[in-house]
View (cartoon, rainbow, N blue to C red):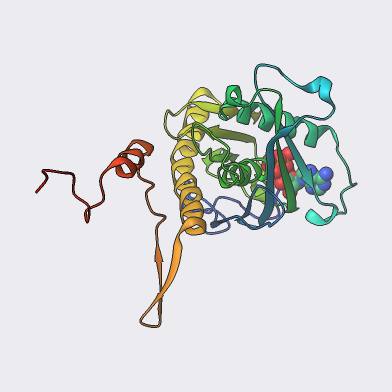
Length: 280
Ligand code: ADP
């Protein structure tokens, strides 16, 4: 929220269309890819409008230094970083107050969604690298990291989407772009657990009335559902089985694993060609 004056009107005369052509409640184009890095346990790449973010996950693995170990649960250490070339003016490399704050809130959000009690004394390391920034990068980073965690097979309550709505020229709009963020009046990033509607992250920068805040949250809630579908689709795509049939490539969703009980029963069952005595 720079409070800077825009060179052009960000909300057009009709009061319903934004400068980039979007409706007030419309997201920017979003694409998500799972499993893009070979060395990481899990990874994801997100393009969200002009944002480009890569996420990688390692763990659960041993904690170093060891005094950070928690005997009761895993710790989740998220690190958000903006590349020097991610913004117009070269950004000074290394952590700053802003990236430390974002890393902290994302660590806290994931600590409440990962089943940390299952992995005492370990760490789950989550890295988010912003390659190109255009507002909403903490949400794009969290969205990518959530897919990377699922790709790494880390047990979680749900896959978490995040999105930031805000206020521009006295109008509440969904998913602010850079112009809207710089010249806008407020910014409300949220991360929402789709299954329960629980908020894992809720921040507000700027001024909003109660009604405006409720509207921004409602926009976030609706947009989060769309983002969550894209996250699940990215994971489905990575784990689908590609087969060649009649010279045509067909994609199948991953096979449902039969429950362990059924497998055990099947192993104990007599083989068809050797029926039990007295059997038909
Ligand atoms: P978010 O990216 O989550 O919206 P902010 O509201 O803090 O986080 O930042 C908004 C945008 O401002 C960023 O996405 C980025 O485009 C720009 N920005 C942030 N930090 C810097 C920086 N150090 N130098 C240049 N631009 C920056």
